[in-house]
Amino acid sequence: MSPISLIARKESGELLKSGRGLAWLLALSVILSVLSLLLVSNTELSLLDNAQVVYMVMGTITALGALLAVVLGSDAIAGEKERGSLVPLLLAPLSTSDIVLGKMGGQVVAWGVTYLLSLPYLWAVGSSGQNLFEAIAYLALLGMPVVLGFGFYALGLSARFGSVRAALITALITLMLLASPLLLGPGLRQSAIGKVFDAVNPFSAAVNSFDSVVIDSQPLSMQLGRFLVTLIWLVMTLWFARRSVKIAEI
Amino acid sequence: MKGITLCLGACLLLIGSGAAWAAERLEITLVADKTNPPSPQMGDHMKFVSVIRNNSTVAAQGVVAWISLIQMDPGHEQPLDLEDWSAHKAVTRTSMAPGEQITVEWPMRLIQAGDYRVVISAVERSTPHIVTSPFIDFHIKRKPVVESQRILPIAIGVPLILGMLTLWRIRKRA
Image (cartoon, rainbow over all chains, first blue to last red; front, side, top):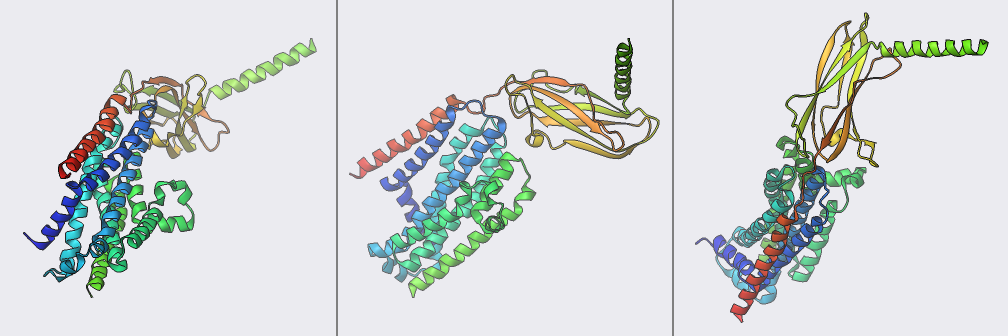
């Protein structure tokens, strides 16, 4: 088994087999359940209201996935350091990429589980509405680079700060800033600053794409630019994580 | 007597202008497409077909025709923004020759339940008033988009399963 797989297996095992990891997943499901139950009382939604609900659930899932990635990423290097297991890891015959990608393997599993967990909820709230299949596909397509990007970013901070708390706070502040489009509707982001922020923010790119596909039924060709923004975010954060772990090695 | 004569004259003038109004240069017909569902519900697609004809002997310039949808539910009467219902909201013609007619299809997706009235209106550059088609009234049946019997099992079942799994895992470790 390759070193990347070994590290990824350990990381994902901590999430899926430990009581703590399962408790996180339980918390995620409770949030999605509360969100869904709030809708039960309102049976007079129009088709677009329903699409709005699916869009809202998609945004929430992406935010929860990013939150989980930030928590896991912040612990990835600094946690090892605080537990005294970083030195053996750095002394092992592994390249920086092996460590980063192995650690991220656990995050890929975390996102995969979050995504799978969200599917029944998306089906429950959206199967009588419109564009459910597109919602599921676009959540995977744009949600994944955004969420994993946050994981890489938190991992990089974790390596640079050497402190879980400092990395977690910084990553959470960044997440809150970038995820603000979830709270501020498009109408509130029409200023010049808002437009620039929307154009470069990967989270905006993802939620705008969800809006465009699920509510406005717009085609893939209109989402390519937004998809590119999320990919650039992923590549930049991967570079940041690798560089930061390299510095930590030194 | 003079007053009555004046009154009659005024009435004739009004009737005359009404007749002129009725003899529009443009004429619009509107029918529901035969393929429309007999009992439409939310999510269905409907189509209306109108024929706009220039009845006059001169060309009509700058013709614009558009569709309007009005909600007619008692207490909720209001014109609707068609943005979400249809991408095909208007047609324009720079000129329509005498006797020329154009057939326009107006597709729409039914977004919300209720009673509705659809009408096509048109104007041309040289006529100072609007021309409208006959109305078509229709009812859209409600389709439940959030069903409690679908959400409840998921909203309760998923956390329940995960909670049991977590407890089992914690007890096993202990």
